[in-house]
Image (cartoon, rainbow, N blue to C red; front, side, top):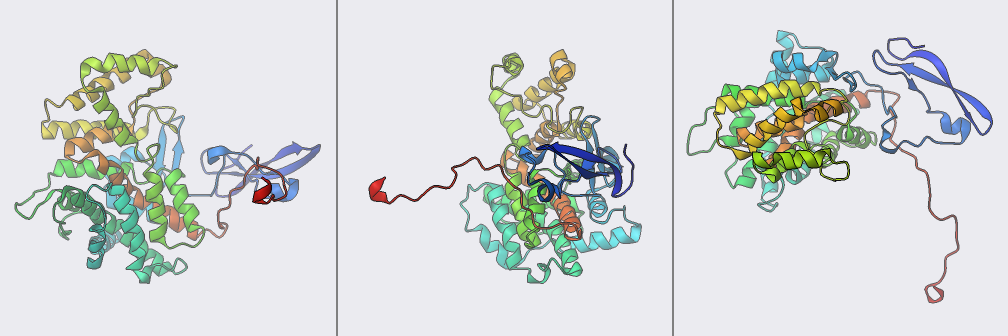
Length: 436
């Protein structure tokens, strides 16, 4: 039995352990499975649950994002991701994630103005970049610089003040493109390009990345729209590792800049935000189309450790709903740029064809995922693979901020404290070093 609606009770669950039975309440979401509330489990039974990776544990109640991996569904505040990617823009989607509803004309105008006029960073912050090695990974730079924002914006670090939370959230969303672009420029050895208030959010970012003082740079609207879609598709993804990291860090009362820096550090992992970079590295390893059959054979061999990166998804057991939009966007960009004679892209397109037609891939549901198409798209636009995860962090900042605000305002939340199964030594006596 289950019901819909916020915090609506369902039939209690019964647990029998050590010869005793205990009843625990269950809570139903508006959609998706109900959950068993085990918050009193230890108090009543003296036992914990064991759930490596927390894949069967709900750590919070949220109204932001819903995923159904079996059906290939992703909703932001109830809106299907493909509708938002095709019909909305990134800042409107950001407003939706932060506030729960799409903005009116007046609300969007105010929000857009606020974000636009927060894009510059404190001038003294620029000195931080010179402290990094020239070949530093952009994510290493972003971790340090974003964390340092709390040293420059003291007036928005009090998490208990609603106005300061509002200012901090807007500053993070506004300044992340500027910081990411500066990290890119630093790696290129080019001068920083300041933001322009007459450009939209995504066009401004592209201008900061690719403009140089010696020549005028005009943003291609098709490329800008493609980047905007990439940002929308990556803006939030429920309680993934980096989002959970942001929530865990913020549960201690840490300031929002430190919490987002923690999220960036987690996202850097190759199993999380580094997946599109890994997909490009795999394409480079394959090298040419004639070598594809060898790698496909290896991918099908269960005794071979090789895995095709960018295919399948841990959450989506069906087609990744973001991948279809990203596929269309990818082909639009390649057509617009007229890229030809690129062996890596030739490999990617042939792998895509095989994955969508080969019975093995279809049966295993190893469809090309968003990381596969976004990696190809970003490479075509001109970003090096080291920037891919930084772009992911830029987009995901909106989701992190929305989740951070929701957690701070949730009276049921408290400091995170996972438990463990201790498997070490029992108590033993200390032995002096001479007797060991």
